[in-house]
Length: 355
Ligand code: SF4
Image (cartoon, protein in one colour):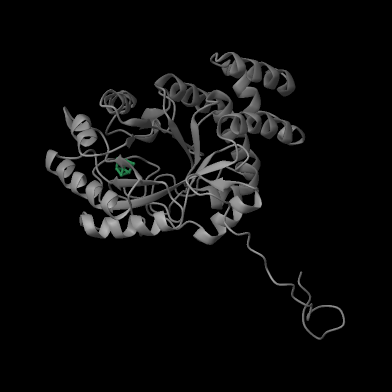
């Protein structure tokens, strides 16, 4: 394994030259020591600021149809046989979806992600989503819409593009080698086909990964390089939320420093891509979320598909504290200041100390 400082130098040189990075150097980033963590973050931050300045793209998820999926993705709370106590409902009406989306746009989101559980849409579903896209854009002019409806059949990508979808999300999730470990009802190749179809139809491809499912460092590097090869414009990085009632229940293998190394590795592999901090950030990064913003240039505002995120106010404070500005806004959100509280507990009082 190369020393991380040498690996970081070579990764920076590869980024400058527009060359694909070496997989062994990316693995060295994942294997780096805690004492080297700031070197790793700094190397990734240089690329983040070079390509995106101090801007943060805010994305807002609307779950159009939740739960009861016939597919068996192990990590998913909506999978076949999931006992997770998540919301289950069928298609939101275009008006309901537009109302939900407008709340996110009012909070600063410049992209709305319309997501539906299932293997893939019927042609009728595509038309329904088209009406929803029109309603969302009508209520929130200028907003970008990304659709995420599963595997696309013949002609569906072109139809979605025609109906106004700006982008299409379909995550690779893990490496080709590890794919069969996380899902048996569709393949890695199926996923690749859909991302290619989305791109060919003129939609911006959005495809990312999930970390913390038992994969190796080599798997993470493989998927990060696969996303580079695929030309994914945006790369959501999710950290597994191991819902009770799913096969990955109890899988807690991430910690904040590991998450930062993973984000840095993805950034170093994809210097100019939108790297988006996605589900699991609050749970796994905790107090390191601010540092993660030095690497990523995009986050989800508010809640995720089946889990709650932190308050939107806290997301905006995170951005303001980093001196950053949401994409599309003129200035940073106002910093949140807590009033000074005079101590009334512990020494000199009869109340228990704060310990
Ligand atoms: S296809 Fe989508 S909704 Fe269905 S189990 Fe897989 S990730 Fe979950």
